[in-house]
Length: 144
Image (cartoon, rainbow, N blue to C red):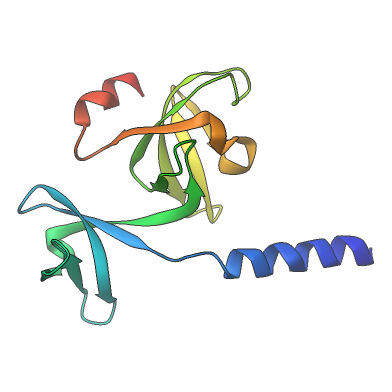
């Protein structure tokens, strides 16, 4: 029992130490931007336009996506809304395109597509490749 408890505690600590990052789809300018700051109280964000400019935006003007804490095989950060190609039969021998999502009911990140849902724990990220996202590449949604 002590080993199991220790393992659970170690996992909880590891999750608490993961990097918390966000990006946003700017609905007005049709552009993906990193988020430099968020005020959940005022429902405002500060979007990084480039290295020298930050722009304010209200939650109603953007779609916020959180970093899942994982990277694909090319070391690219995986965010909610990313469209991911699974290769080498890593998900129960089911290759294809999946969308990275946060499942609020189970409090976990999942991959959803082709009528299937997988937990990231069942996926080897070195066999995942981000090929786009649901906002900048809507044509890829036909493949999901």
